[in-house]
Length: 171
Image (cartoon, rainbow, N blue to C red; front, top):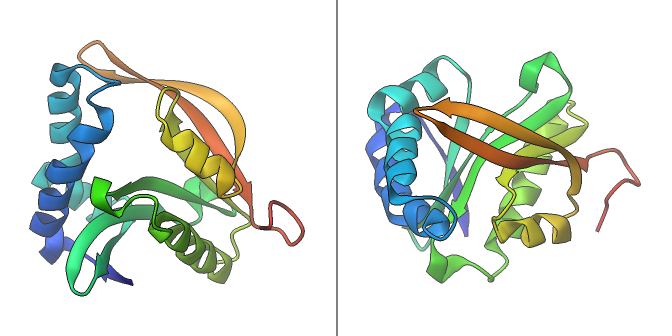
C-alpha cells in the first residue's frame, strides 16, 4: 500500500474516486437528493480548491500497485488546537476489511504527532456502520453534533476522538 499526498493538480483524481466511493457508502443512510447535494457541496472543483488552497486540508490518495483505492483528507492544528481533524476517509468497497483503513489511521496519527497534535477527531454519521471501525481503531464517542448544511439538510453526526497521548487508546 502506498499513501501519497495530492494537491490542486490532482483534484480530478479525487473527484473520480469520490464519485465512485462516496454515494454507495451513504445510499442506505441519505436520500438520493441529499447525496447529490453533498457531492456538489464537498467535491465540486471550487469546493476542493477551497479545501486544499484556503482551508489547509491535506489530501492523500491510498493506492496499491499504482491503483487508487481511496482517499483521506485531514487538517492539523484544527481550530487552533493541538488536534488533527480527519475530514474524509473513504475506501472503495473492494478494499474494505483488509487493514488499509487502520494503516491510514496510523499514518494520520504519525503526521499529527509530528505537528505536536494530541488527538485525532472526526465526524461520522450516527447511522454509518463505519462507527464500529473507528471504535476498533481506538476512537471514543466525544459528543453529538447536528450541522445545517443548507437546503433543509442536516448532518446528524457523532464527533469521535482518539487521544494521541502515550498510554491513551493505544492498541
